[in-house]
Amino acid sequence: MIQLEVINQICMYLEITPEDFFVFTPIDMNINHKINNLKVDLDDSSLKFELDFLFEFTTKAGTDTFETSITIDDPKNRKKENMSSSFFTIDYDSLETRLILRIEDRSELFTEYQKKIPTVIWWNRLNMLDSELNTSISKMIKDYLQNYLSINNELSLEEVEEVSGRASSMIYNFKTSIPIGK
Image (cartoon, rainbow, N blue to C red; front, side, top):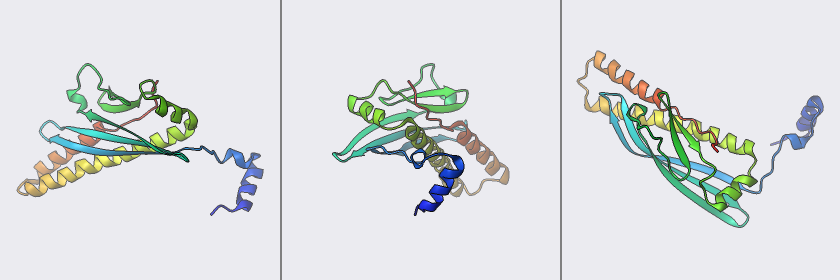
């Protein structure tokens, strides 16, 4: 619960108004993701998977949904051309994967929503999505590794450490970054 006295004290101290704290937008935005079709090769520490994204914009008139899917391949297996979907371009920066949200290739309705949402809210939501993706990818690899080790329970300690090192390498390589592109 927001205490008005606390807001008043903060505003007086910082010499600002309550409007500086709050941004109103007539649109609620939600971005969800799902990871599909995981392919892991522990021998060369590579993996491939599909990312599905669901953008939902809710206004008093209802909800509009935009979906896109993109395949992420290991940066070591990258082609000279960057992959893209209707919403994202994949940029393989050294060994890391960056998803760049492209502004120019979307429908008029999506662009209208984007114009009505303050940039700071877009950036905050995309930063949250970046963090969620990193967590999902790390969990996905760890779950695969646990399953792999339980199936191959006769591995030596040295082999377990080697597999763990390869999995750590995969997690490092798939740190995503989702800046808003042009």
